[in-house]
Amino acid sequence: MSEHVKSFIDKLSLGQAAEAGESFKDALKDKIASALETRRKELASTLFNVPTEAEPFSDPKPVIASPEPTTVVKDEKKS
Image 1: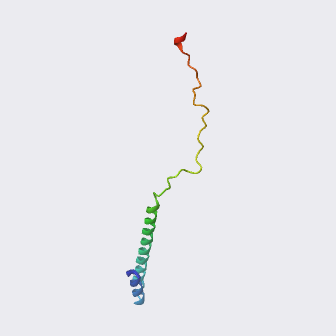
Image 2 (image 1 turned 60 degrees about the vertical axis):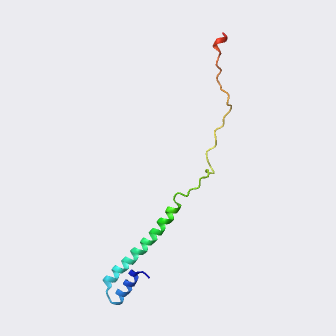
Image 3 (image 1 turned 90 degrees about the vertical axis):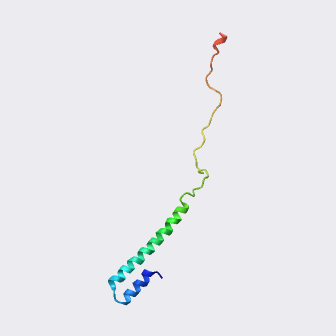
């Protein structure tokens, strides 16, 4: 049990409701801070662990009809 929870119970048993409320708030703050820290560590460990494989549905490659040039260049020296 945390110090804040013990303090909360002790103050309730003594009839100090206002002080018990503050101890309760402190106990909740500690619990939330601990949960946030745990979640932050989980996110940090998985943030950059992205698979490096290609997407299964990538764009298709373009179709190339022929690698030969389509224009004909006349040789000017033969004329």
